[in-house]
Image (tube, rainbow, N blue to C red; front, side, top):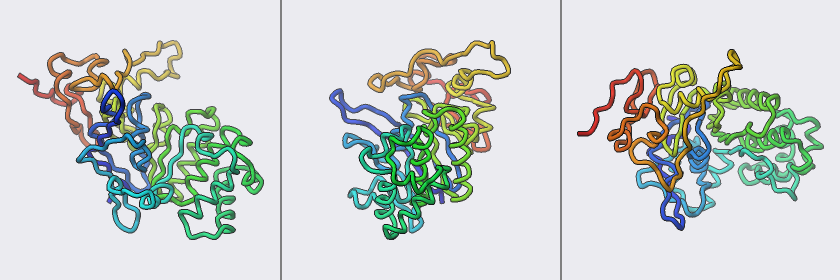
Length: 335
């Protein structure tokens, strides 16, 4: 059984302008010890998808009738979307699932020491005493490479450097030994040397604890270093999925190819960057048919703008949602 299974996830938000679709028909699994990379531009629905795994989206959230999120918490499967009380969510939030956010300062209370926050979390989610929780918190700070962890335990988040805050947040997220770690753009605000250290740390933790990771980023270079499988997301839909090697070396969806072509090429520094043309549409003006057709170079009028493409297999776990993906027979056009 997968560690977490997401099926037909659809998320809409109630607003003054009406219901806005943020995520549509998203399905994926994450196995224990596996890192799934979720890639896409800002506004593609990555963070909304991740927060839904812990039910952290706002009160104006509406989930689809057939949406299902099933978590294997070790003592039987949990239907996350069926949980109604905050008390019931404790076994998910911070217990079986932990999350690392993009901006660590937003995750720590500024007037409470880092150590106090770690201890409070452990007292809620474990049966440790306060003394045991403190010792465990200091040990976790040491394991993520924070020097003098016993002193740092009594400091506030603003006294930490950016890289150290990120490490402290990882220590806090891992202190309850979660089965699933959600990492939402955890290296975006870091310089490249600290970024590499954090990536290596997360790899080591996967090996040591056997946890699954949902790694969210817009950076395909980071994904190439960290993930086992990749799901490429655009305007709330997954448009391509497969192993890292399949997706990066043999991209089949025009959007995936566009993301890769936009990367600087170290072997040809004079080569011009090729951005994906156009801008991601507003969710208020969601395109009909294939959501990418307004920016796609191979879209065909009368088909791509009318018919939603099905996810089709190219073999060995690689799949793409495109009517005219290379290597696949063209989808039958409507009369």
